[in-house]
Length: 405
Image 1 (cartoon, helix red, strand yellow):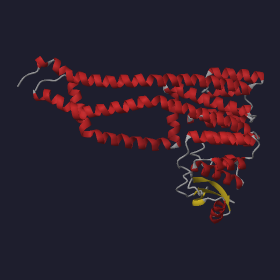
Image 2 (tube, helix red, strand yellow):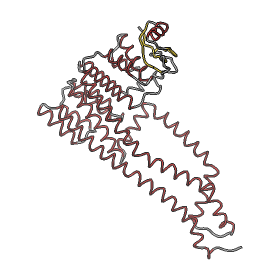
Image 3 (cartoon, one colour):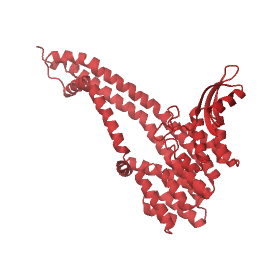
Image 4 (cartoon, helix red, strand yellow):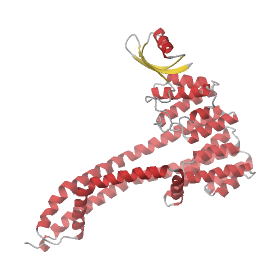
């Protein structure tokens, strides 16, 4: 049986879409007619070269909100003792988004072919990040898939909610900066030249600020488009350079050591690591496997390499506290809580408390940075406008010093 994504209309003309299983397209159309539906299109859900279903490697992924919803649905079904194949089938049938339906059907087809859930997710790396697949793999190997999916659903939902909060907070400063820069550019190109031409025509020696404004205005008018083009090409080339794993590792190492980004980067990575490790430990995943999965969550590749060393030291017989201390990337608060958790035999709850505290500190740090962005943009734009006004007013104030031809 093959899964097909269909679009159809019923007898009243209402559009319907979903996923249906049938031996072939003709059988799928016949089954739709038996349901009193007139098929409009019937396409294989897991067609690898389909342009309409962009889920192959390197293609676009579904949004974070959709990923959080799918994860919660699968988690609820698996926790209710529904096997993963049937859970994916139910999610595909209920999906209102054709992309989500096709994606879950494709994953289900791969599982039906004998592959593991984590391996099936690996066919869609743009949709399911590395930490997602690593957590699922650890859950499958430990037989605790339901628990891991439940914690993973909370993690994905929390991450999506935090990302949305930051984006909304930065929306107004970003719009303000764009509008202000546009107005400044228009002033430099269309207004400033006409105003300063009056002073230039009199042959007087203008203040340095006015001369600098004239020079900058001429540069924007003559080379502004070329500068934008150079910036775009430079950004594209930098992106290609950073896509190389070795270069990305160097760049991440730079961010992890450079003030003031280093503190935020280490805090963010420590919170991700502790939260994922707490989730997997509470789900009874073996510690070494849980550490490897948690290490895959850390965004910074340099710190991720150090985190993987913790798992190696655990396999060599070291304690978690000493292994994390040797890595040299975790805050002292996390190390102290891990030590107390190991001593009391309550490592999972201790990690959960540490992750909660780290997330609280990270949220406070992000809120502070976001709160500083808006006044920072206002001050920067206001300062630029003030310099432009001074550059225009200074010759007027010193009008008596101008030499009349």
